[in-house]
Image (cartoon, rainbow, N blue to C red; front, side):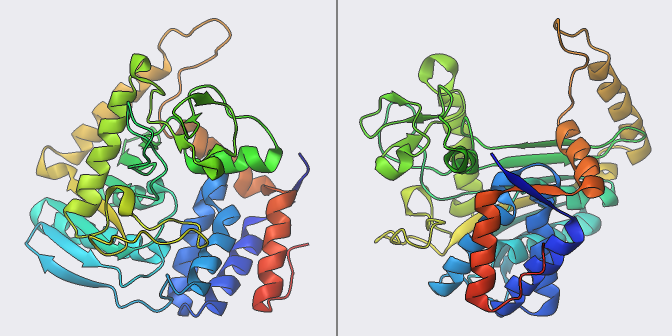
Length: 362
């Protein structure tokens, strides 16, 4: 499908302009733009500027507060609950992760659960904030109910991603970032833009039958947990998604299970609201709270090298370590630009026109 390439600096400038028009203060608009575009740089195109119009629609529907009063509503030396005041998750999440990092600096570990937030972009960008402090970072969030648990046709969970980032020495960091579904909803959206079918094991129809229709969610279908079906371990993906919901929402007082607010602004809010907004969970663990950081990073290098030199299958030149594809993509796109599908470009132009922003990307 036709694409157009844009350099990061121009997309960053444009995205800041959009968030500023929504009413975000300058510092928060820049933070939101950085988080959003980190997805495009890392090749997670489903969660980058392709979602920008979605955030605008949430703001227009008055479900996003452009000037939130983000505050701690409960804390101990190592834990906190943060109220995001309906702010952009792109803004709320970095604030919460900074709190987790500061607590880890003081007492070894920091754990922060967040209520009353919105979609926070890719999980990795938040977890990776811990790396420069010689800490392991954790990041997870609940999301719109699109996922049917094993043996069900009811949509009870979101894609509920988990990220863990750990520093190394000479090797790049280990960055595990995954949805607890076979594929994230954004991957379906990309297939829809390309008019392509979904692979086996991604989705089921309204009656619970396997489907390859990338538009099946609009017809009452559901995403499947990681594994696809029971024979391939979907109960494990279901359990992981449930764990994320408990950490993100049950601990914080956010909405949970099928009552999580939907990302598409046109989808009605659930009638039941047991909590506030979307929930996130963050962790930061100071490595030297367990052992000297230099020793840990030395052993991480050895551990990573072991995987890099593992014997490969025919036709494969190396074993990848989590974080490798995204890091390589970031290097390539930082140099050569970020390709956007024609449908995404058209969507951005429409946003620019709606908000009265001059189109300066061409």
